[in-house]
Image (cartoon, rainbow, N blue to C red; front, top):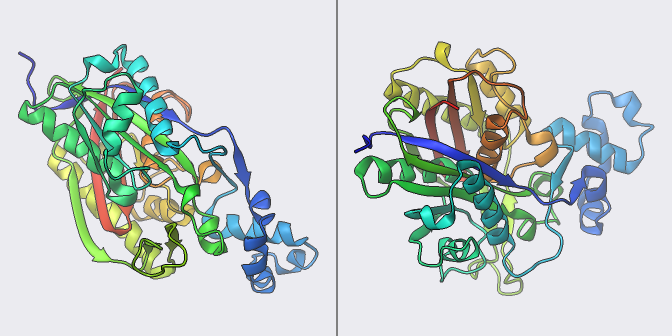
Length: 357
């Protein structure tokens, strides 16, 4: 029998909406224009003299990119009733195809999300039905932007314990459906997307190595949802609101660095051995800050936020899928990959993967 002390990534997949919403497109919304402090933003730009000649939409685009690193994000258009579930289902199909498996081969499905349509049935049941495995067991977890790594750690534990041999871990969110578009500082951040991996029982040293590292803590200020029946009765639709500031940026960098260091220690590896770091893409200043704090050469830390924005837990999942498919260049075989994430709440998590083709 195969030893069950590791979980191998047998396949990966991702799904992004076709529609692209640029910063300039975003500025076309009345709610953004009406609440954007144009003159304050103009004064904050690095080239203040050039900023004086810019059109308002150019100021917004330059400001958004300077503050977040984002140029555009992917967003869903028509709502088919199950927007997040549809993204997750397609990501699962692509991961299963990459693994040469069908949904009926699976023992379990784990979904990380905060934008499922229904609380009951839980989102995992809905996605399982969509991919053709209506009797597949599974459940949904919410660890905000750290959700994919949390779910990956959960899948690892199922395989390590012998409770499952083949499972799919998927994260997906349709954040455009809950983002507060009356707040420009929040609206520029978020996009939609989903990513998935198929985990199978593997040989020692191939797959997740060591124990993933998970931490938590309570702080509502950086990220919260308004309108869930607590703050307002007038607007029952939840609105995602993001806090900010240097303190939060520093906390995000230090938390991911600490979690990644703990996961590497558990794996018996060092930063010198790492080929690739895939952090949560919350802000380019955070991922660049992580790169600087860890003193890693450019190219070892992947930065994908410019074209996708913050897709919550899916940023790590989508970037991992792209890395394994060579979208960001050829990676060594085998590769030592570190995943690190931090989510509102706070949650933070990291995992180490030795990936062989």
